[in-house]
Length: 89
Image (tube, rainbow, N blue to C red; front, side):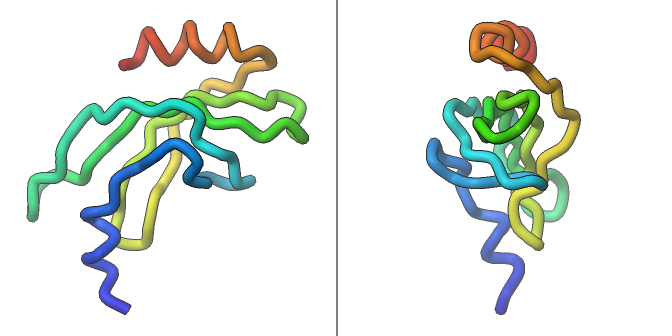
């Protein structure tokens, strides 16, 4: 499998990312991929209703191994998640 293909992936609503896996419900692209320099990056709200904090605002990067989620702000309500998402995008 050619991992370079993952670098051109676009994050979309409905994708699952992170550990534990959560579903993207909103995302804004922050940076386009610049080959050899920068990975494409998004700010996203993701959800998993089974978690204590069901909503998380993550920075998500299209890396060679697939989407990588980090820098999470974990929220108990969608309203709180939207607040943090708007501050980041």
